[in-house]
Amino acid sequence: MSFKSTVLAAMTAATLALPAFAQDIMILDSYARSASPVAKSGAAFLVIENRSDQDDRLIGVASPAAKLVQMHTHTQNSEGVMQMRHVKEGFALPGEGMIMMERGGNHVMFMGLNVPFKQGDLIPLTLTFEKAGDIKVEVPVDLERQPGMGHKHKNTE
Image (cartoon, rainbow, N blue to C red; front, top):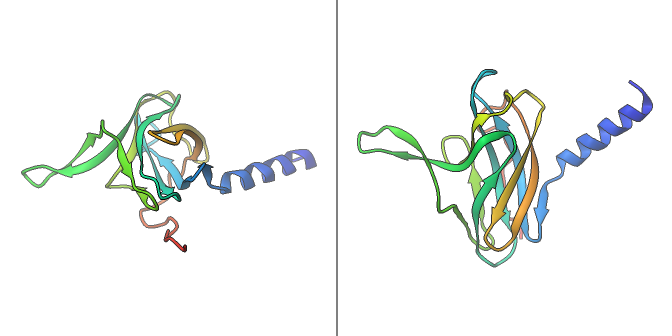
């Protein structure tokens, strides 16, 4: 690998390690996965922090990676079975609060993947907020990550 390629790779890795933010909204600890190399769907998980005292709402998600991208959550039906459902109204983001998008809970769902998710790929994702507007992020694919392997987040202010 040439020196130029090595430097470019290092700069790219350093950039990806930084959180995405717009105004007072921070996107942290993002990753995407699919169940298998031939899966037609995938999901993204991330932490959205609101560092302002103003409430906001995540009202939309979009990506060229799939034919349909939606906000989903899991709910328990009357028989006790967990079901995934589309959350049309979006997710409230309280001032000085956060949205945890994690496996088994709220998440971004990609349906009709254009190409399979491969380890290390970057998935472009646009998050649309009622007040903050659009925030574009690149979500790394991590097919090996298990629940609980992410960072712990807490407010320090």
